[in-house]
Amino acid sequence: MNDIADHGVRFGRIAAMLPVKNMPEAEAFYTNVLGFRKVFENGDPVGFMIMKRDAGEVHLTLQPTYKAPAFNVAHLIVDDVDALHTLCQTHGLRIIKSLQDKDYGLRAFVFEDPDGNRIDVGQPI
Picture 1 (spheres, one colour):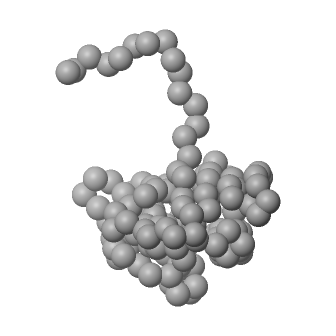
Picture 2 (cartoon, one colour):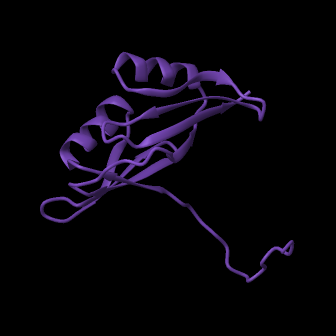
């Protein structure tokens, strides 16, 4: 099917939903390491949280028995992929795919957050 569905609905933001086993630990990582800020939380104890940084947004959802899949769950475009790669290494994060220039026009790498969520990071070349 080659036709684009023109149903009149305009799409807005879309954010990755990342399952986490421990919300305070996840909040600390996304705040202290990646520099996000919490803009919303829900529940007592907190079971859902929205984190933002610049135009980036992730939604954290508490899943105490979560087992991360072996594929990327989010893609993040940044303006300095080398600096973020260095930051990930400095904090001992597991690098799944090393930093390299890709033939599709991105300089990219993949890392795991503390819950094992694989995040693909790229910067246009």
